[in-house]
Image (spheres, rainbow, N blue to C red):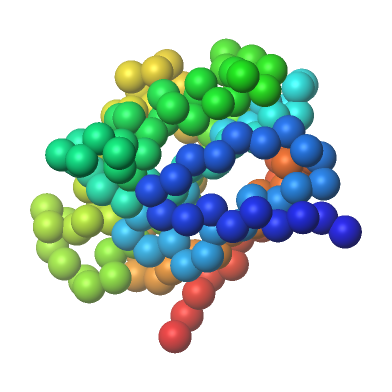
Length: 152
């Protein structure tokens, strides 16, 4: 049986235990970023919740510009080859039907795309936008992602 590790908002985790699953519940306006090195079977995930750097540096992982480099460092320490990562992005919902310019989900998505570009990573897949939350299960042994739409 696989061990589930629940990722909290504003946190990043790297893992290489093949029987572990990283689980992220009810991703709304935030962005769940999932990275996987298939060759070395190292996975990483971050749940970014703000599009601008926080004033409180202890909360740096809430912002993709700081959290992504942190996540990559953790993955490298476990033996990941960051040049061959598969990158998936989930979330960025507009839960309040705000105009695009005011959408926190859109701003979080754009900040995450900019952070990916900054470190030279390319997005392979994304499921972002819309007006619904998503829950995610990321299997470290296979790199597979199970996605569930959360409706109320």
